[in-house]
Image 1 (cartoon, rainbow, N blue to C red):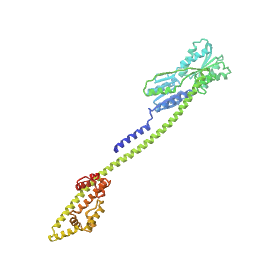
Image 2: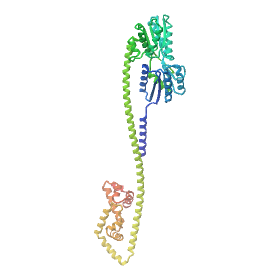
Image 3: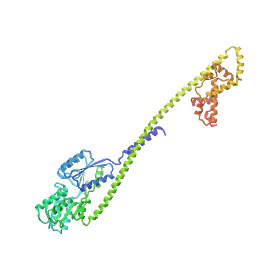
Image 4: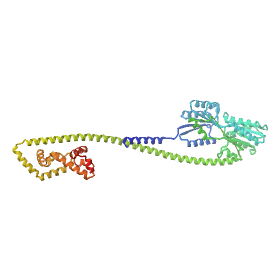
Length: 525
């Protein structure tokens, strides 16, 4: 694989790993939740909303609670909108004080889901809640039938100005209108708390001293507070029917109070936090959704309270198991994220190495190319030098031939004598073999080793062999190279360098000129 291909592959792998380490799997949404109070019902809703995020990564919930303070809730809603939320879920404490603030959020482009309670404005994206009129009407009919159509009733309503309080009272009164034998002897508003219900009932008892057959509380807590007030006033409470709304399955909730006969009956007011968050996500993702969603309700009596509590216990066990799984999944996710980061760092480190390697290879190739160019120049210079030496030797030879004819005969006789001088040839051969691997070995160095001038060496070698010293050196080098190629496993470059050629290409040229074949043909034989 080429270096740039490796570089490209590792770059893509690193980018993919870094993207995976940052991937959250879903869109990131911030949902603000404005609660009007803090109680068991609101806590249950909060837990369900949080549990719904287990299956919807990327959703952040921001909770605020005004503790039944409408002015505080206005400020909290304004702060949530300014914090950059994508959607607002709000349960208005009261209708009039909060309508304008919620309208402002809606007009700013932030979707608004009214939950449990409405305002008097049509500016909202969706509404989710039980039918408070139907709950009040259902409890009114149940109470009237339990009283046999006759009796005196007291009612503790919810917070003044809240839509659930008004709608439950209206439904309750419409139900009682069907029973002429039942009369509402007194009505007082509470504030949804047990203490508020107790105080409201105490006020009623101050102005009403007649019989009490049943009490309707706007929620379970106020109904329990009303019972405490009746008991403190010395009125017998054992024969009075007490009705409430919410029917929470918690330890102090309405279902347990019904099971323990503290309350006669209660209406379930569902929370459905999971469905609420899914609705919010459908709105944020541009999916179809219902603008009005009515949650179903039912009456809890002593006959079915224990069954509902058992069902709730099973739901709690499953919820706890789900929370445990979520924690484990969170730890696994953190571990995977750490691994992805480590992989990303490793790949980034490898990427840096590959980049450095790429530039190193590139520089090496440029250096090799430059060396080849220099080698070619060197070979050219060597060839030119050898040619000049040969021409110089020829000039020397011509000069020698131009000497006195009388000395020529003597020199020829000396030449004949030199050809028989085996000792000289052996020494000459020995020096060349010793210096053969040195590419810088020259005729000057050879003549120096033999203690002769270059001219004397040329004359004597030419006389003995018929060849110049340059030719003798090259012939011995090529002859040894041919033997190495045929008898050893050395490659052409290794052989060329071992016999004194600094370039394998120049060696190949000389070899072909001398043997009339390529070096690889000798190695094949």
